[in-house]
Image (cartoon, rainbow, N blue to C red):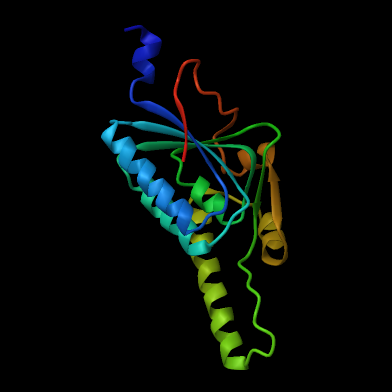
Length: 186
């Protein structure tokens, strides 16, 4: 076995795209079960997602970040909203030079004619979701005061270089599985 082959032993490459929802959670759970069976030690995962449901993203973050598999996450296009939380499960994180990230506060639409007590429940839930996602964000990323001000009222967009500057990624690099390496879609 060559030195390169030895370095790659236990490494596997995956793509994960679409909405962060219960279907994605199930797909990731199934993929991780296969990874365990295949004795994967390092999983390289390219993520392409504009977001989805907060609880599903937090579930995936908590699940992936606690496994005995090292996850390396990549952004080659867009990782946005709750998908950023999922992306942060990577022990090492990379983005292509032309990739972007977007984070924002939680939002919801109330039913027309909703009563004040129903609106309060929605607002309380949104605030709780914001606390959970911001706790994870602050654990990994050093946003500037200016970034937090934008985040408080709008979508915060970050280029790869900006993401590198705040610690969201470890480097600007493309997802590039080695020649001959199997690539699986989750």
